[in-house]
Length: 440
Ligand code: NAP
Image (tube, rainbow, N blue to C red):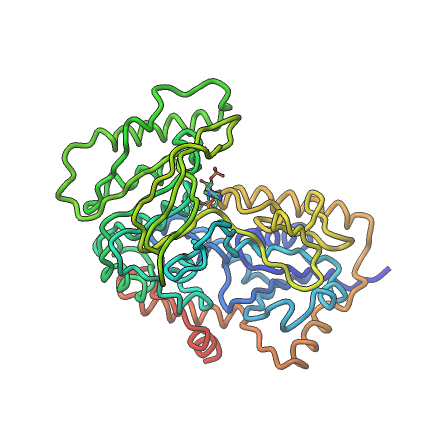
């Protein structure tokens, strides 16, 4: 029996990783918890995914700050598993390893023209406007008149809303300066929101859908013929309720009076499956096919038609990106796991476990369940049998890796907030700037 403290490694400092760290820290007060992130900044999608104009959702970061600042917990930012330390090395060092790396890679549409210029995945665009260093140089082309967003989820709404807002309407956001400038300079007059299924099946949440009603410069255009009169039976209670509330908003949009004075038209287009993106050197046109719904699925087979699309953004969901050695389900794009167990001593939580679904509170519930699982498995063991931080630190030092610790993050945070000048913050979006401030 060993009296050494347990060593827990958590890969990913996003909501799921932070919730697991918090839960295990409370139940195992003597444990050493190392939370790794490839970015120098913590909080995953709270910083890099949640829309910059939804500051209320970002308040959860304060709780995660407290978790990462606790005694026994270390934040090791700027450490990429697979580059600075391997999965096998982490397993050798930790009694418990939790993989909570989220899902950031865009799913592919799989249609001709997807690789043309001015076609982007939502993950790329969100990383760009939210100041994730790897996305900083995307500078999506917003120089045409028409932009199509494929997908009827909240990410599609986020992108459309940020484009639609005036500078005043964005004043209290932390949208990065480079994205504010690009949106202001954009010449887009028509935004198409394309759903392959109907309004009943859209995964928008109602509050997000309704936000367009308050925006001054956008006309919300809905063809009333696309809206069913009633909710059919058999939709299921939860989906039925959501569909009813969404229909109410869409009906109100369809019934709006003259909106011709508004410079940006937002077209809600349902039952249209993308077939191809056409253009010579860049996207120019999106070819769609009418669908009908059979047993909840979109079945294409109707008329084919095109809309102008100088820019196309697919917002159709994400996959996780594994590091070498990690058991991975390539078909689903998630870490291979059974209820959170990956292999002895290794667990997974959040979007990389379940797929990219659910808001942050849903990930809290998932993380707590995984923490319970870990505690149940640990009940059979006593004390640590692994070398922990000593091995991790020596391996990182040998490779010249320089982690950004919690104090380093606090310096970044202070610098960004100070640069905000009335906004919540002005993010540092270049890796070299983040590291320079963290090491000051
Ligand atoms: P999502 O809600 O799963 O929506 C994806 C959309 O893409 C669906 O409409 C889906 O249609 C469509 N789609 C998938 N494959 C397609 C294809 N090949 N062709 C055409 N359309 C396709 O995903 P998301 O918008 O990326 O959001 C991810 C999660 O984050 C969700 O749980 C979301 O609620 C959450 N989120 C929340 C907020 C918020 O609370 N404000 C903001 C952003 C994200 P089908 O339904 O037909 O598959």
